[in-house]
Length: 69
Image (cartoon, rainbow, N blue to C red; front, side, top):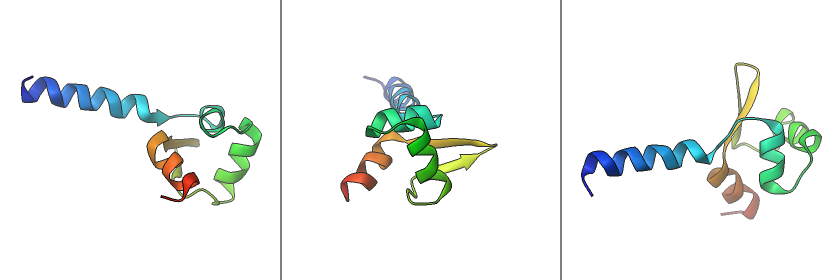
């Protein structure tokens, strides 16, 4: 595989790793959207960031934070 193709594949994987709403974040960790919103707004989960009024998180980083890695 060429380095360009490998780079494009890596970018696609990173994009699919991004959770863009409290509902997506909650679903990824087994919570309701309301519970995820509370944890995000209270700062209890540091891997969730608020950008332009929306919560964003990397699924891999979120799961690592929850599992204590």
